[in-house]
Image 1 (cartoon, rainbow, N blue to C red):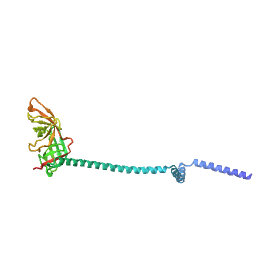
Image 2 (cartoon, one colour):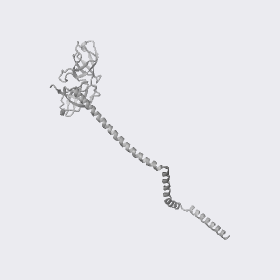
Image 3 (spheres, one colour):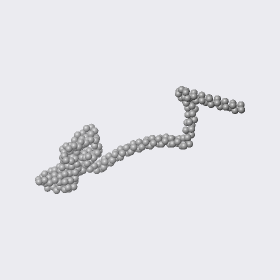
Image 4 (cartoon, one colour):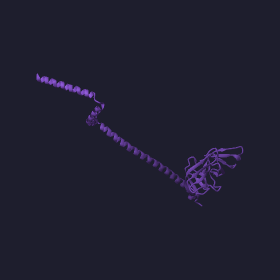
Length: 275
């Protein structure tokens, strides 16, 4: 009986203590609670982080993040390799262009082996309705002089009209101020071809002998008369014959062999080998 009463008193005391503590905590300052929470966090957070690590370990999340790091590194490596490949491709394109230019030079040299000639690149052009000139990257220091003939793989380009130390200006045969003494390959009759205002790929053939038979498709070549152009250089092909009421006024339209819009490589004939 005594023990039972003692236990009851103890229970009441514990209950009172709990109630008092609850009241104290309930009425405590917020800062004090925050301080208590911080103390709890010091002990609780390491445990919580440990549980999180174990959870990730078990579920394989750590492997996921490791794989992400690996993929990121591999992506950077692939970007670097791609940049290197693009650079190599550009270098190959440059080499290819240089090889094509060298091939053109060799073809020109072989085709016009009867002449001493200097290869050159077109570095500027002035193609308008009233003039048609180009600038090449060789000049007086390379042995270039005015009135030298300029040719391309497909035929006659023009002649040198001015020279600097390292460049030269060429009046092309499609310039309206240009006149080339030529001949028709089939009949060997002499004519004069000049540039036109209508087209930079068409020449006008005039001074056709009245008894000459002019054939469409006939080849036109330099005659060697006039003191500038050597004989036998291809100029173009007769496209059309224009007859007039007066036969002395008839003329023909000649398509140039050289495409002046795409002209990049030329040879400057310095002199004939036979000279």
